[in-house]
Image (cartoon, rainbow, N blue to C red; front, side, top):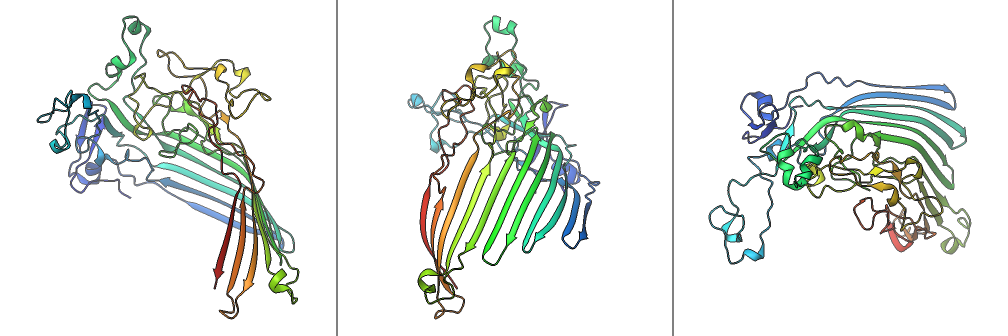
Length: 462
């Protein structure tokens, strides 16, 4: 599979060696895409099944694959790079209404819509992908034992794992060095010195796709299944651990981010994955009540059905951060353009990140007193990534249904009345608390998942 290229060669990449942008040429796919072709990505698949006896089956498998494309917003589209696409913003202040812009001017004046966009605007963001960037490598494996316990009933026990290497991290390749104390003593500021502290002069943010992340997942998975005449039962339980060094672009939750704290020390972001969930138990059943189905009372008392889903999950990771709002290391671009995900210092590990048991509540979940924003001269906090978990979720959904046969319409036709109860016991399930240490609401939960919802429905099946 070839890398992305543009039909008109309107594509560019940053070159760190020359501190300049290079543009695509007509020199084959590599010249047009500015990326190297990959010819040796061998992807084997192996699977096996063995029937140990009449009631037991063993299964296993292994696969090696490659991730050609990542969902990195526009960061992997080098045809959205300058000079063909400009990312620039400025404030059109009403204070300048008496001073209209002319020509290509846009600073210290008011530019009307009729004047259009100025030409040759500077670009606040440049894209960079190393031409030697390898495809992400994904290994998957599993082993399972399936046992028929008794009639219509089986138990499945499985170990499932995977590992990813050369996964992309999105960051500011032109991340500035921290300001020094000597510079502060001279009255200089982080914002005022940001450009001078960047390693590649003449550029602001350089959004880079860096293939230095990894992921790892291990799980024990149990499944109990019974398919009887009147009742069907399925219960699944997973005990798992997922770790990695990056989060997913455009899907950040609970402080999660695709950006590292320090683009030059990605391994320091090793921690629980943003989607890590140690325990997940889901049990469902469908029960067709057998009474009165063969009597004269069937139209009134027969045809009833009960359904339920019971979900129990542990909490998900919380990534505690503080914003770079003053040019400490970067210029505060959105995560998908390569921000920095700075974390605070943990003062006393013995006191922990969460408020102590007995004192913890939805308005006071995280221990603010034991966390501190580092000085700007040493902005990389010692707190790990995703080291604390939020509230668990317990929910029961229930459905009571009654089927009415409509044989005059069609032999298999029926009308079903359903009374659906979501969160039947009205359990309060708290969402994640605020994880921004600079926020006044830090550690406070501001929302919950849905309360009990009752829904009545009619469904015609034919």
